Image (cartoon, rainbow, N blue to C red; front, side, top):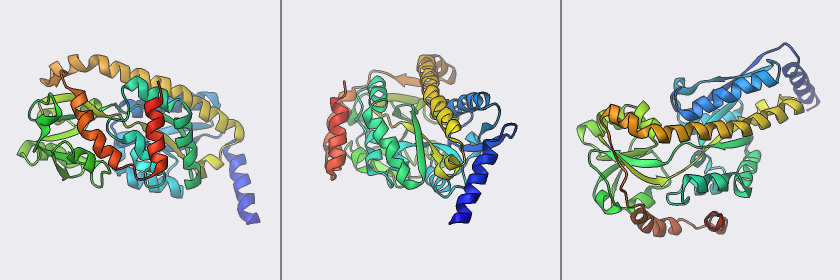
Length: 321
């Protein structure tokens, strides 16, 4: 025990020594031009500047082909320094982390941001501490919308449709409330499945839709905005313990500042959607009756609230102005 403590002290001294540059490996399943990857890149440049070059972030971005479940395991065992994950990926550790990923929980992007900037967001980040993780901040990763071979104006338009869902997705029961036939498959198979008619729709955020070239086989992007699950920036506790207290404070400060940068990128994405869609020959369906989705999904969502803690969190989110 004493030997391990001595080794940790030596490592902290080495990591905080002036003139030594340490590369922190960061993973993200999205491509290099995605707002979350760009946000981590901005954070890395600021961190390097403010620590005098001692620490910098090497973003894996599109080079990371591993699933978020695998990435989470790497973080917990200390073989990866940090990552941007979908908050739902943490729900096996912290059940309450599934709440922000539930469909129809947030009324708008602005509502989501207010919730995550407040006590609920702080509680979710603090809960990660028990699992060898340090939660730094939340990033927008965009509202999920259905896209596919035909337009969707209301929930009933999806009745009977074959819709791709991620393997082991916890919200399948809620989508089934829309009358769809869930088809479980990994993201990399969606393009082929849309092309050959195995599925009629998939859902994701706009940058992921564009980067994956799904517009080639899905001419309609329907702004259902049925889920606004945020991303969360997480650091391995092993890596965190090797930073000096001063560098930890700097890291936290820069991470908080990177949230504003991330949100600006997303706002820019929203403003450019019409122009990009025209270039890609994609029809963005804007006249979507989102209340029809809320009406169908909410009862199914409420049946999932088997935990008083989860039910309370949903109520607190609803009560947030």
